[in-house]
Length: 378
Image 1: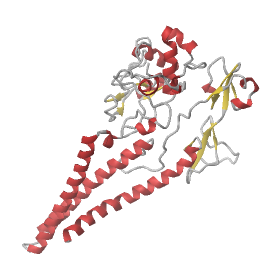
Image 2 (image 1 turned 180 degrees about the horizontal axis):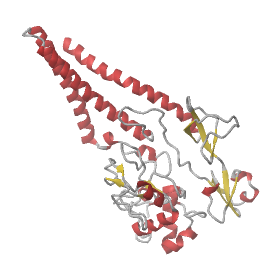
Image 3 (image 1 turned 60 degrees about the vertical axis):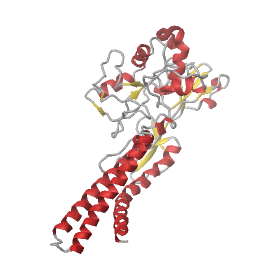
Image 4 (image 1 turned 120 degrees about the horizontal axis):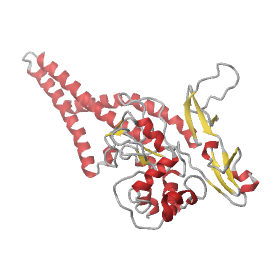
């Protein structure tokens, strides 16, 4: 009975150690009301001048949804890219590609658009925005990263707790001074601590043996939440018919007309891949391809070029943007000296397209793109 009590005490210590973390988690969940409305939580700078200045970054405006104390919910401004009767819902003027012009109205409210219809633009910033840091892991950038950090924090806590209990048991054994009862209690503490650690590591080993993704949490969850989640792998395409995600685009950098000068006869397929990967948004970061535990995106732009594994046109990025290379099986990487330079290049439409031409062999092979496996099947 006493041994059972010690084991229960050990696990209660672990649970209590995680209570503060779960409190942070509960507070962080207050951002979901803002995010579910299509906004993001930003630090509130206040209004020191008393002029009613907009507390949100350029291109966004304050919304009524709650983000918690000292934070403000910011939504992208709504508008429309108008090119004759071809209209695309947009958030800021930079979303529009010439010759389209930006109108600060919904496409459905513009007479010229009603005959041609409109194309929705996805929220590239969807996902989880935590409010508090996790001890030892900083502030993860999205929901999958947060869950991964909670899991890793739990493993750390078990290991540290076990080590602490072994030290306490060892000290109790030293001061037992030959007292058999005291020495027995000390041995029990050490045994229970080691048993708890073995149980935790065994659970990890079983899950890892069944499926490594059960303990690695590669971020596939966010792939179902937003665009910008495709990745470039080393696989081949899968069979099937393209779905609506891969419909060719008629406006912007990913329009079939614009891509013909890069991909020739394969421009329609390229447009479909671009639509599925990024929605045609030039500077969109990946919602899934992120270095862990820092959460920095490694794939960017129209074709979601992985800057840790590929150069971007004439910009050398391999081993200079992030290292080691981010893959579907290895997410442990860190930004390197040229991370920002390569990120900027990948978020430049022309360079992103040029690299996609190289990787796809002029649009003949799309098997490296995740969107091709799940949506396009080219």
